[in-house]
Length: 357
Image 1 (spheres, rainbow, N blue to C red):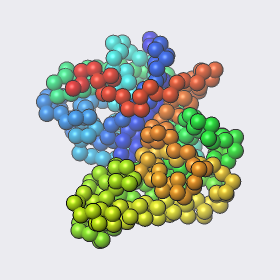
Image 2 (tube, one colour):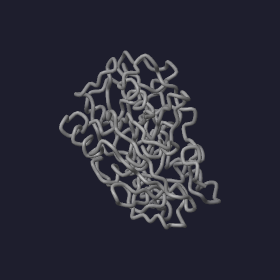
Image 3 (cartoon, rainbow, N blue to C red):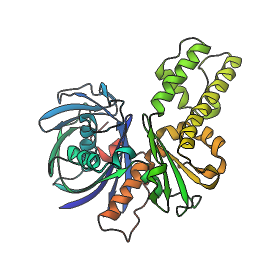
């Protein structure tokens, strides 16, 4: 039976996945929207980055074209996260023709991880069986395929811990005090590690994530100009920092909106820093790692606030799951080898779902 190593970080916005194939010595990643809905294998109008899956006799649409997003609450013990995690594992086994033995790692907010009953309940909720059969339709024209996998080892790691296992170009002293700012769509996991060990007294989870940021900025821009909706604001924030402005022809108003956006983002970072201050973080004697999708949006403002003491990896939204994958591999008895960083931080779906178009 072929063995695979898979990590899944099912966030409120995206489900991120990393897997390692020992035979090829290659690790890769993929991501899809954390959304589910009723699915039909007869669907011949399946949207881009959307899939039809069947789990335990129930058929779902998952990804971009689905309608129901993850609940905006700290806990991840929900059917949406379970469906997306099991689907992600099946995607990583898509090319196999026989049952696969899987070592899998998943993550939960640091506050839930530190409560052992919650941690164990989450693991057993997600993986309530030993063996699974998941059927996937990868595109509007493809034929559904059945994927079978068996759970060999199942690990739960605290969100933020993955940052300690990502290559930081020797800019961070992991033996010192490291503040990990894991900025997600809802939750921010803000954790101090000392020589790799979590300082529980200094750690916290708040809800100043990307969703709060975008909604607040949309209201701010609507007050200063005319109405700006959530999706327009999100599109603006996906631009390079110096190009973040309202999509209008007036250059003066563009410049004004760019300044307002930067000021708002900087104040959001200061709110996060004030939460850290209440916990007594020693800012002048620490280094920092910024990860999570919102860290990418706030990279310029975080650098303005923390200077050269903060490291933000490329595509920080994948940092946790890549770290989880390395931790999973070590936990499975492979401590003598550090698996390579993914060759692509976002693979083409055809590489993992060859029938997709």
